[in-house]
Image (tube, rainbow, N blue to C red; front, side, top):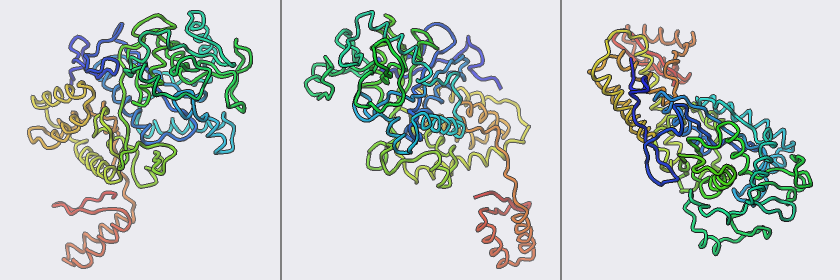
Length: 475
């Protein structure tokens, strides 16, 4: 079945909400049909929690929509393993040191362990891997070089061992977050007395309150030191994507500080505006009392905890599809149970359709594909796209073969791996109980049949009576 995105000349229009302009815009690549995408990755001092993973699922959906429409995508994601403090500004505790003290390991060991854990989470959630997954500690030279460019252009100052970016040198500083700098200066209390302006930020540390910092490198500024958090993304993005690129993504918490500072230092260094054409941000995963999920909280859910509570990681992926990425997503066990039930129901139906090879493409089939494409191209509207999928399941004008082909197309966005679903092998013990129950039913021994059903259920399986026999499935 040919979809609308198969031909570049017939490509459907994509619209995205651009945080920079505060409006939905038609997506147009900066230079060509090869899209350059940068997404902020994890700080590897702990496991990624479900709130973090919502961001990566949203970014995966975006990437899949671009691919679905026939674009090529060069995707770069960073691994932050140095420089990130517990505050996104230059305040708080060093996150890598915090992880090392917690686990009585070196920061290098902590970074390696949680980088591996993140890669495992990506596989379990069916996230398409980035073309380049780059560590901040592997790009110290590039970060130093970028600070030196800013220094030569007069955007920095040096105080008490640290190199600062001077935000007063940029007239449009804070444009991404629509900051009112005059008001912010009056309201904001700064603990770093070396800053000329409250929003100035450190590009390179040679002296900080973390003198036990293990990760240090020689630099042009005297003592050994390490980079600030914001410089890493600018340096690595420009190395792999160029001095201007199409899309930068992250959570809404990155807007006021991290992404604002990335724009400032990048546009100051390269002299090109915009540094990034489209900025896309996802809303928080929130708990029942309205607070966001955090690593310091009691409701710290990881992929591992999802599995320990009897869920498949894809249940969480399906859960995320049901809420638009720009809306807060309420997390609850009841909601996750609902997603699990819907995903399992979908998988069961797909298994029944999988081996039906009869039926030609129909007009209804093409209309559904057109409708679905329009929905995902409208700022990644996965809730509407899911609703369309369930419409397809109920539409009697479609054959099972029609439905199956549509679902495979839809799954290029949903990422549930529907084409790889296989029936679980039923254990011989369960099969024997089912056959024995079938014999009891033929003899109308209902008491024994009910007892055998209970035994089957206790072992984790359901049995359904069919006109031609029975059907077994795992609970």
